[in-house]
Length: 254
Image (cartoon, rainbow, N blue to C red; front, top):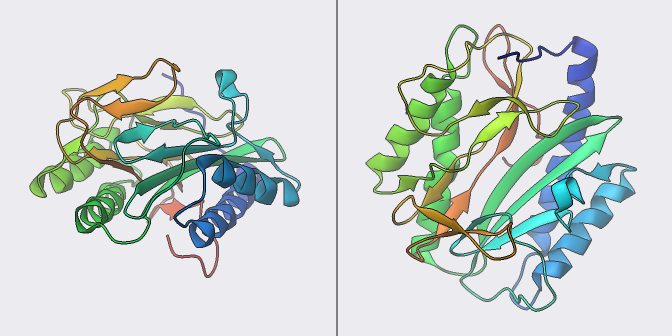
């Protein structure tokens, strides 16, 4: 397996793509409210991205028809925005988006609870923290399995399950590059991490069982048992020391 190490110049371009994506997510976070449709969310996200003279990574990617994946409640990922899907009080909303800046991609996801829903908020918090537990091991010399172990152990210690049929990925001039990044441990150690690798690490965590199903639209992935699901992702740079989150911006909370 060949995992391409990025040059300092490429990393700077990816950092800018990530900064713009972080600002886009922040605008979406501030706008989310009951009564919005998922199509409203998509249109706002695309508008912000294009205002930065960038291209949405997801629009028409393998036929996906929108710029922002908007997934509600039991939808794990890849929900297709629609004027018929209205966000309600208490909904868990997961937003996944990417930005292309001068030919380089960023990719990140956030999950939010609109209004009050204690169970959904706990799931969102654990999902977010599972990412940070995983990237403690995103250091040169470690293997991908070390990241997966951090994510899985933290998640399962809180009574939740890690989705098996979806994964993170390398990222750069393509949205999806090698390697595949699992969020659970297998017998394979996975790639040995080297400085300059850029990875999209994205735990997808279910309140119930880890089994998922694809809907008839061939995109939307839902939990089989109807339980809630949350998603958290960042584009991460491996360095000689601590990992660097590229999908971030000054003053924006991760």
